[in-house]
Image (cartoon, rainbow, N blue to C red; front, top):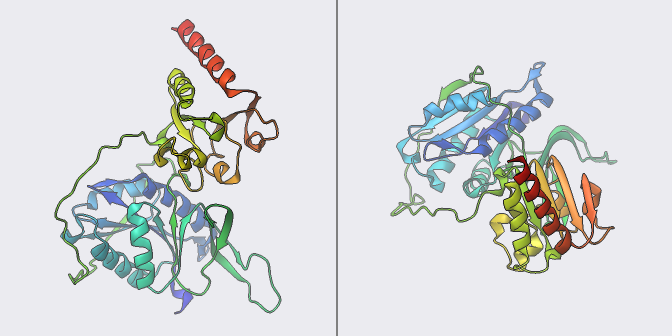
Length: 353
């Protein structure tokens, strides 16, 4: 394998039922940042989105508007619904032909299935569920007797159940592949004047024994809100005390138009569903306001909410780590403070009306 043949940063643009997921735009945003550090002839490397599906070519303009320089379209009836084998064939064919230096895939249900399958077929490694990506040297510090390689993709992810953070590189194989957690990267502002070059690609898909037939498709309506889209989050931890006590957090959320979320301890105790969990093993959120109530502030939780615009912590322990990242902190009994805060907010809202 000649590593010099591999150029550019590619992302898998996931679409379902003809609609692009937000993760596609988040990946483009990060890819543009990485591409600036991987110059090709003095200019930033191209960012290419790979779009797979049937009748989906019209989505290319939207990918261009969010920053993609090129969009490779594999349009085939076999790709109408996601199935591992045809999608893996298609993406592997693009990689083998176009030779990207970096290939990013969203760590969604689809991406977590597709990414490892494709990495095995193109004989490279894959770092799963990344929370940070950067370009740098590997090893991170020069070691005597070991070559330090430059311009490597440094892929950071939680390891050992979120108890430590690992930075991983793939110095000897290409492409450097990673699945990236949704909500971690920031998409660029939409610019409809930015147009991508659209390239039609024939992956020569062949049915084989690994093809599956979809007999029935059942779509369940989500019973919980998506906390990644919330502008205000009222998040509770073990310190809330009981599932019943989350009622005071729900009252506060209702008073300010917010959404309730929680820490891992709450989910582990069975008080709230995992869809509401914030943190390394939950979801990464970026609300305008984040209330951390009864949350100690372990690094695993902070990693999932530290990019919030304003963080307000309420905890009876004045030494709790959450106060180190909070913009505003209140030390005291949440059972007294939260209801008082709710009533005060309701009164101000009523007066304003």
